[in-house]
Length: 148
Image (tube, rainbow, N blue to C red; front, side, top):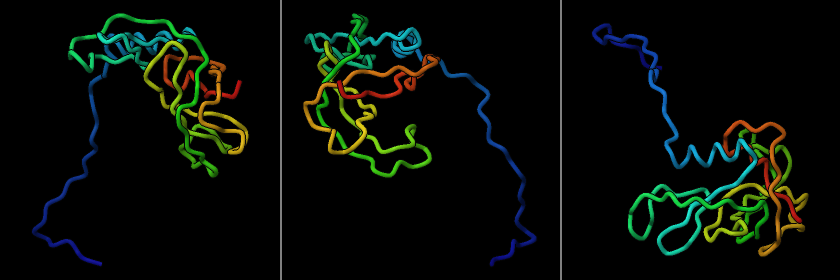
């Protein structure tokens, strides 16, 4: 154990942030839609639909504003099983993290799938969005996806 030299000055300091961060128009639109139990994406210049919506077009770098209302179903594109959820996970039982291509979108969205067991999961399986009981305008308004 080292000792502090009497020549070293120290002071307790608590770091705090005194500002409020806004979500901006694109993420704000997405989160407001979630609060209203709607899922939206936006369309890029090449016609692809992104969900969550992208702020800037990956092809032209222009701001994207063409919003598209999406359904609540999709297809699992890829997945990984979490057999032992950790304390910070939002589910307290085994689940999958999955890339889900929402019907009407072209780019997958990462979220959880409550399939019950690893053997019930498969690439290409149809899933349906399960809303949280109370929506607040957060990504957690989507509780998870579940097999159709």
